[in-house]
Amino acid sequence: MIRHGQDESRRTSPCWEGDANAQALRVELADGKSCLVPYSRIAFVECEHGADHTTLCLRSDTHEIRIVGKNLRRLESALQRFEVGWVKAVPSRYELDTADNFVWITNITVSELQE
Image 1 (cartoon, helix red, strand yellow):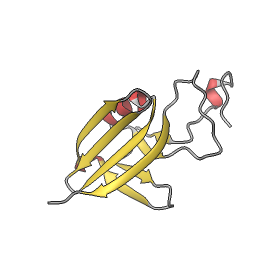
Image 2: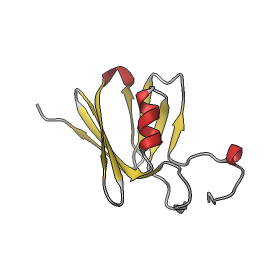
Image 3: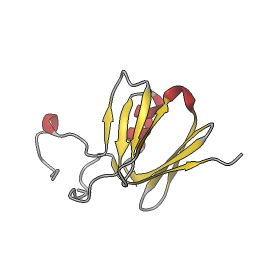
Image 4: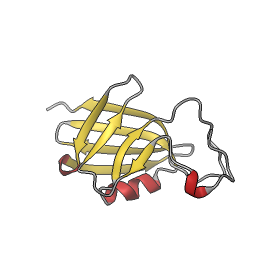
C-alpha cells in the first residue's frame, strides 16, 4: 500500500508508468485484456474536470479510450510529451491518500468508434 510520507524515490505508481522512449500506449483493462495504441494514431485528447473526478478521453481513428480518476493532469502532461508507457486502473488493494498528488486511475474503458 502506498502511504503518505514514504521515501519519494522509492514510490512507484500502481496505475501508470512514464517511458520517454514509448512508441505506443499500452492500455491494461480490468478484465485482463490489453491493447496497444501507437502514439502516431492518437488524434485527440480531451480532459474533463468534474467535482470528484477527472476524465481523459483519447481518440484515435478507430477507438475511444476513457480514463477516469483523480490528479490526471500529470498523466495528461506526460501524454502530451508521448511519455506514457502504460496505464491501468489502480488495483483494489491500494487506498487513495488524498494528501498525495499521484495519478489515481479508477476506471478505463475502450470502445470502438462507429463510422
